[in-house]
Length: 489
Image (cartoon, rainbow, N blue to C red):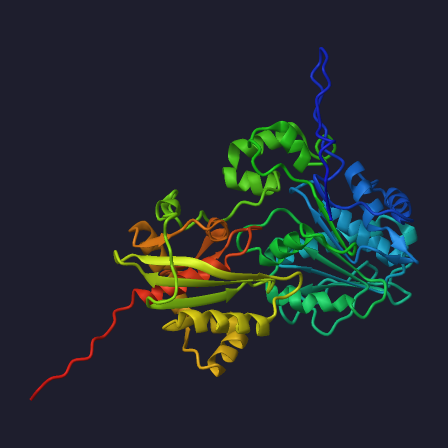
């Protein structure tokens, strides 16, 4: 359950003198606040002792993500989502130090897609240890200094055997390792393979915690976007999401919105700093990095109003005419769609969503295959299109039931995306205005390569399995059909 904090919008106090605006302490979007004992006060005391007292927002978050039950962390995954230069990396460094020196964590692994960022946090940890003798005395020194530096070998070891190390953000970087704490910086840049390899490192530890930091993502931040989707969908208490962000449709120069996204305003950064960034950054960069707003790195591939212009509420489609099917399952595996296409009497391609599926964890391939078979028995489609990278299991079951399956993946799907765009712009396509399909079309973005583009999901948007299936159908329905000829000789 997500708590939308709406009662803490900062306001300037009235008076003769203008008062500086101070950042918001509470996140605008946050997992439901926990109740129970917390080690937050102990953490705050430690931070002050080492010379870095927590800012109010850091203390507020720590009180929640360090809540315990039966001596173990309730939050197994912690996500701090906040604009740049607000102190999230320092908070992570202090959490790493607390893990080593007061929480008894034996193994801490840090990862970042940018090696420089990982080293920045590492150096900050080293600097704090070097400045505090009571910490330095507990560390195994390397030629008289704290920490080992070297490409791929950065680590800090304590005399009791505890260890903090940096690993590469690759599919092999964290594989085979085990951690009491996993720290990943700039989650927006982490790829699926690195995430899949890193996440299991904490499973073997009974009191582990994964600590994540980032600002807003873009259309290609699939790991971050998927985690945010989960946070918005009634997650378990084990996921703690803390997002300081401006409302999505707030004005770019709304200073109250600045304070919502910059909790360190008045402490580490000022209104003047943000005003200068507004004057020098592009609007997209400012929204992403200074307002923590999810902005697609690319605009919708569909020209404004073009999809709506293809709508006809009187469109009817039923069994009888030549029909094409296509289906797709979302990358999250939680949603899927079946789309049908027919040639209308006026020559246009009529399309509609026949069925859709949704599940909390993963849709059932067997159930989807069975339902598509029911629809196929009714409509007798010429072919059923699919992407073998995403839906091979369902396709195999349909093949076994004598359906004609046609793979539209890889390079063919890039062409299919272009074919769908052409059909929409030229109004060779007609639909009835189904709300689910329209919502999915609005969630589309474009991923380009050197020569073409393909449909993908917008950043933190919904399902696009329907448009993907739709592109497959249009692509196959527009292919030239050969006519057999008998030549008398």
